[in-house]
Image 1 (cartoon, rainbow, N blue to C red):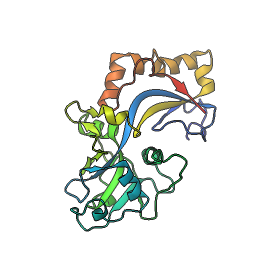
Image 2 (cartoon, rainbow, N blue to C red):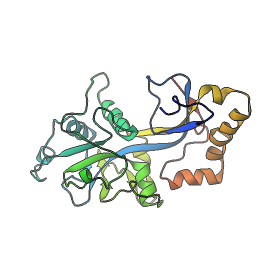
Image 3 (cartoon, helix red, strand yellow):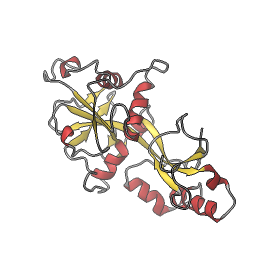
Image 4 (cartoon, rainbow, N blue to C red):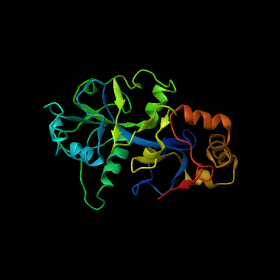
Length: 252
């Protein structure tokens, strides 16, 4: 993490699109500020169905299912092309959240992305060449998608392109009327906290540096308690946390 390789003279915090890992340093503190969920997306007009179960997704990414007709005989006889942001050996935060969600289907029984899984350089962007394939599918942040489609937060290399988010286990991933991540999906195994990573020493000291960090990210800070801060979180597609949870901290 860039926070570890820098000092407070050059970098005070970084955004973390994932939960705390056992491999994280105890000197890094994660301050929660919103909720996201990892969905899956595929090109509009392609061969992917509107819905896949979590187990179907796991089998696709394990390369046990390689043809759409293994999902449904009514689907085209075509080879599935699963893509992950980053690479199958080193997925991005969105790819890692997807992997962890599917791993939770059978705790204690390790699995991995199969040899048929290819990578894409950027996450949450549908303009990459490999995602123009009608048989492609890719993990995608539901919150980021909402921010792009409804919040207008797009730019070069940061737009859905032809990708649309699909359902999981028959459950919608996006509430199109409310223009938000669907609440039941955010509460499922695919939901996760997004946090600000800070140095524990910086957060827990009693100096101006600590006061500045907490005034932005703390329970009573700008993000968690101000109307403007909460409106920005919503506009970027993420679900607000309850007052008691926003600004809460965790570390290994």
